[in-house]
Image (cartoon, rainbow, N blue to C red; front, side, top):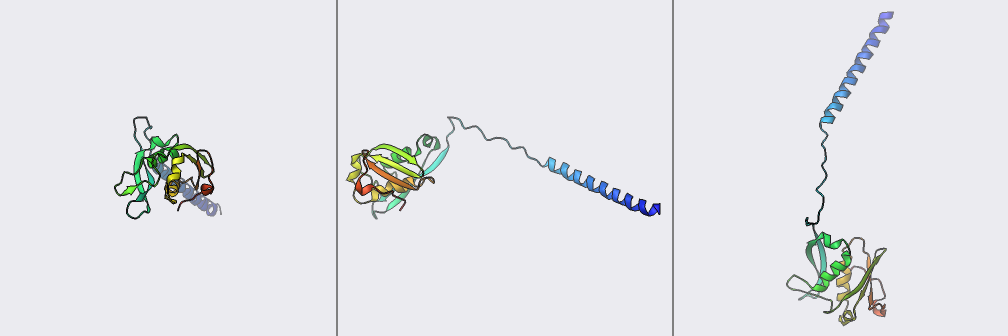
Length: 170
């Protein structure tokens, strides 16, 4: 009777030992496969990181707003990315066949961002534009930033009746 009980107990112990050995071998193999990740190099002032921005200008022949892609140093966008991009837009296109929709001499008085809306205060020269291309040149450019959903305009600190709405990408 004792033999009948001892044989299954020995069998169970042998199985448990085999399972333990198998598991410890797997753990050892997995430890060998661990790869140490080294940190990326630290960004210093002399490292140039490029990013692309899209600016919208008029196609000279069709009169349609067209995207011009520019590559700039991403560090330029750290302090006030909206001002940097607007300054690039006001400077005009680099691509032949594109022209600025924004009247020459237009200046940015201030830019404020709050809850997805950018409020831009522009100089009076902006009023010399005809149609809505100048407005949408700015709106389409600024809404390329994922956090921007609309743009409000002021002229020399005043909200004008014709620009009282929040403009969204067209």
